[in-house]
Image (cartoon, rainbow, N blue to C red; front, side):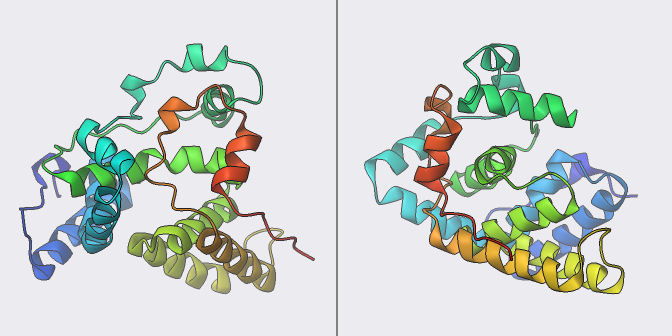
Length: 230
């Protein structure tokens, strides 16, 4: 059995090495889907070039360079959920804290060492997953998770999201989700992808500076309108 604590990705790893580490991560994630180290490492293995491109984009602006330099964290140990929930209802902080309470889950944590900006962007992508649920309005059930993956694919070009969607869609076409037919599933996935494509790139946004901002304001700023499903 693979020990996730021994897994790492060398600097300038070849495609063969990345695929080998990704395979080992998948072996761990089959039995431990929420493993934070393997989840982030899998993202980096499959999306190394995507993250490198995002780093270049961020380096082109002063705000982006500051983000890369300061490397802010949204990990659980950095968040005071009780204080955030005391903020006014409707604000990002309040709704973010309530999201964790209502879904009976905890914020993202990882022990993976950040060796460079690409590692930081991989970690940042994982950390913002739950914030995107709050901002986009996509649920945390299987359908909502797939919509969010499609949104991330459209917005950032994340290959891991494409991999998850491909696997999920294959499974859904074999055995449709309860209450969601095959055609509806595909329409919603396509709509979420288009919405992500039409939205501003979210990964460089400093969510930590906007806990007191209404979710509705941030959703309008960061997310294209949601398509109506007939």
